[in-house]
Image (cartoon, rainbow, N blue to C red; front, side):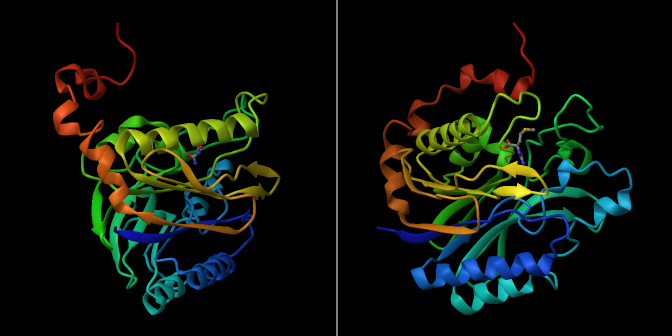
Length: 306
Ligand code: CDT
């Protein structure tokens, strides 16, 4: 057995005016709960430090940059890294990254149990649009504020497991999991901010959104024989509802733990990395069963060609 006690730390709503310090205090409260339960790795959502700002149209680049972090750790987040080191709890969380070259990414990081950053991921599949869209009930401007990630889908040997990360909309794309699967992934951390209603089809509400979210994460886990830790930012942010439904999913695709509410909430599970072995050596033994001669269109084209 290679047990890792994993916590999924769902965050409730973060309002536009909430400070980084107030959010970090809430994250520390969840980490303290995680410590009392014995967690060794705690996963937080996408853009964990702020409201989901891509819902707001901002023409002024200087205003946009106020939502971004220039360093990680920085003064606001250092207490998280200190807690990690002092209590021996690895972390993963998402934030908006502004690089020294002025590039903008939707990023997540992974630490070891000493608070050292051992992995970074930049969101590849950016949803939404660039310009203000009058046809939508609300905006989703990730394509305006971020560029697509340039790091691919790396995996990292960390705390006795092979770990990878993806972010929100990435979870809807099977390629996300498969690339990490081909790199031996055993645990994927995945934070999300998913509006409870489809901005382009208001009849698509929370029930269907939750169903799709779990469908794709459970399939990704099963088809790649990996643990998936999906963590929501939930609740109503300045009038805009985000769904909850944070889950820990085993390598057979079964949900082992699930958040009940839409506030700050920790769920946890002792995940045995050796549970990945059966799937990886039988039905999803990629080396024996994949037929790459038929997969060309997956990397050769984006849209449909007949
Ligand atoms: N944050 C994020 O990626 N949210 C998307 C919403 C898609 S609708 C534009 C998601 O996949 O949940």
